[in-house]
Figure 1 (cartoon, rainbow, N blue to C red):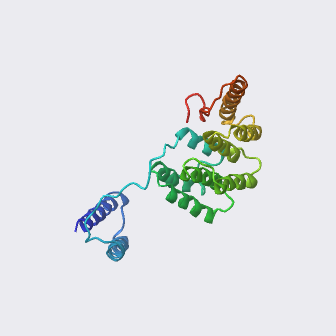
Figure 2 (cartoon, helix red, strand yellow):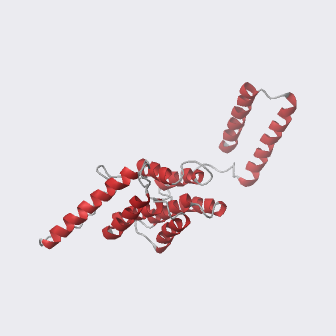
Figure 3 (cartoon, rainbow, N blue to C red):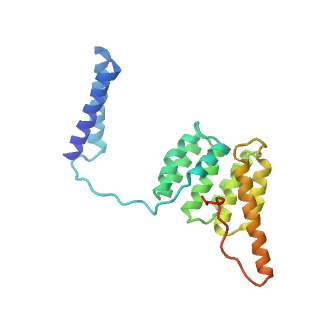
Length: 230
């Protein structure tokens, strides 16, 4: 019963808004009411309006998606467009911990845009999150495939390097961030961001090697996002 009340309230709100703001002619209202009736029929068929509501548990642990890295990804690839639109729900799902559905969204986008640098790069990052920060063969393939699609773009190498920093593969990360910096244009808005992270990583590697030679050992990786961390 509650489901029908909610449906009726939403339908009334939509009809009121159309009447107030859309200025529809009398003939068009026939189509509007037909659409509402069709929606009601679909709800009765596919939904379960007679069932009581119940709380839904979160799909998994929440994940902190750094907005700066999301912005950086958009600057390196595309922030708007047919590929980027799939990343809005995917990023939201990642933040909620539902990595499986986030990956499904990205793969749906790839079904429509199989050669999308943006989506292949995002798929690599999503697979890393899905595997708890580990870089699976599938994630590495996604990054490398993205790099093959756009050899002159730094995004795949940068985000692969970011994942490698987080798991302590610092030498590999240094190679991939060096490649990303070499691919970044001199006027690119993100060039300084890559350069800063690479400089901090190199400084940490040098300090680690000096400490090892001195008889100590450094186990903690450097902050992946720069001075404040992502």
